[in-house]
Structures are given as structure tokens and as C-alpha cells.
Length: 66
Image 1 (cartoon, rainbow, N blue to C red):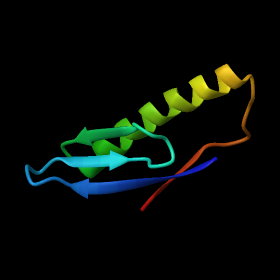
Image 2: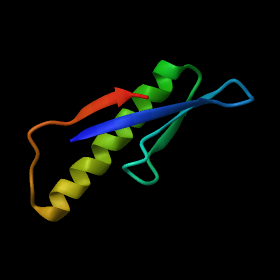
Image 3: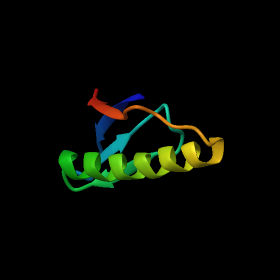
């Protein structure tokens, strides 16, 4: 599974990171790196829950910055 992280700098200086392929998976951070780290952690939780509910597995999970 490959997921693209999209970033946006808010007017208040915070970064928002979002993974469009996983609805609702977004996070704010003081830096772009912090937002990236948080959104990856949320995404991994969502993916783990999906795999558990579907009783399936995956070979890999990869994130790329947009």
C-alpha cells in the first residue's frame, strides 16, 4: 500500500498533513515534520483497523510526500 501525504501551511503557521486515500486521516503540527509524523501514526492505526476488520494482510505500507 502506497499513500501520499499532502501538506499545507495554514495562515497561523501550523502545518496540516493529510492522506486523501484514507478519509479523515489528517493532523496538525508546529513543523512539517511533526505533522508528517502524526499523520503517519494515525494512518497506521486506521490501516491496522481495516486489516483486522477485513481479516486480511499487506506486504508493505509506504508513505511519500507530495
